Amino acid sequence: MSLLPIVFVQESPMRYFFALFTILVLSQPVAAVDKTSDHARKTLEIYTRIIAMETSKNLGNVPGMANYLADELRAAGFAAKDVEVIPVGETAALVVKYRGDGSSGKAPILLLGHMDVVEALAADWERPPFELTRDDKYFYARGSIDNKLGIAQLTATFIRLKKEGFVPNRDLIIAFSGDEETGMVSTRMLAFERDDLAGAAFALNSDAGGGTLDANGKAIVYGVQAAEKTFATWEVTVRNPGGHSSRPRADNAIYDLADIIKNIQAYRFPVRWSDMTRAYFRESGKQRGGDLGAAMIRFADKPEDVAASDRLAREPSYVGATRTTCVVTMLRAGHAENALPQSATATVNCRIFPGVRVAEVEAVLKEVSGNPAAEFVLQGDPTESPVSELRPDVAAAVGKAVHARYPHLTLIPYMESGGTDGMHFRKAGIPTWAVSSRFMDPDDMFAHGLNERMPIDGFYAGLDHWSIILKQLAGPGGQE
Ligand SMILES: [Zn+2]
Image (cartoon, rainbow, N blue to C red; front, top):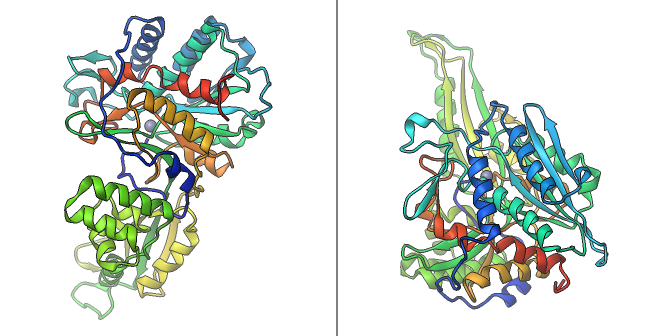
């Protein structure tokens, strides 16, 4: 899961979606939750057990966690051949097939999550990071949100449905990765090397998406993650013959690089919009009010309104929703205090809209640099992934799960700045939406950070989330 500011999908009209969910109602949760049900107890048991497994990178603990989950699923009645732990270097992936009767003739649904977690240094935490602890309001632990909540819920939901005797009308397939927070090697294996997964109709990811609560616990909106910006980084280097610092020359690698940096700082990529982002800003503007809200509404009405897009560009949370962004994040230059620099290098990190090619952005940066001699070297292998246009059947199923808790709440697709397994599945041609059960106040959000925590009420209130969605999409009452 990415913690970068959320931005909203552009270039992707989803009018039918807004036709379904145009009413915004601030609401409190409905229906009390039975915390003693078999499903509640099983979910908490799995959550507790897997949180105690320190699955940060290079510790080699992910295969043990995958095997534990596999044992639980086999004990619940899944056939051994349908529960597969796949070693990938020091980590592992888990694939579990919930066989359908095929009566719908529809392709399988993939269910995503990741078993690894970001590292946590116990000395810095107020509580032990790899033990589930609690107070009146929260569960605390590394992975309590990202993403062992999703792993526990999906696993326990498979167990629950199996025990209920539920037979889906199409295959449901868990595809858990084991290094989402680092190399995503296991993710790429699942997305690109498994013929049995490649034919899926779509994937639902437990690692992002979810509801936003205000400070009073009222639900504001439910976000469906439908796209991710492309994360791309360049190193920009300027070279110079150098020399003795007592004999300065007119040209200088550091000065030349400084000019380039100032040019990049001054450049803004063109504003982009779509019917969907305009609808998003119109709705958000009404909720927010004030001069920012007014700017959102003006942008929605007329995206060419430069004053409005300039106002949004001043907000770190919204600038990314209006354009591609690039920013200088690191510097390296010179080799001695008494020598003219022979090279100077800046790191430029960009968040690129889906549909805009990495190569296009590189061409723009080269031109903007104003220095034809500057060398641009793209770092790594950025993943360009398309927007997943939300399907009405998926929107309806997720809406049913959300509205069971918060009637009439608005669902809005959004794009994040990059960082979940979903981008690889989207790139592989499998539309992917992240639709976690989580409802949180953004100020409560400590994923990746110290003292990561999950509201206990939300943990229990979300217990039916996945079974409602799966029964709707693969059950006899499904509306697809
Ligand atoms: Zn995550």
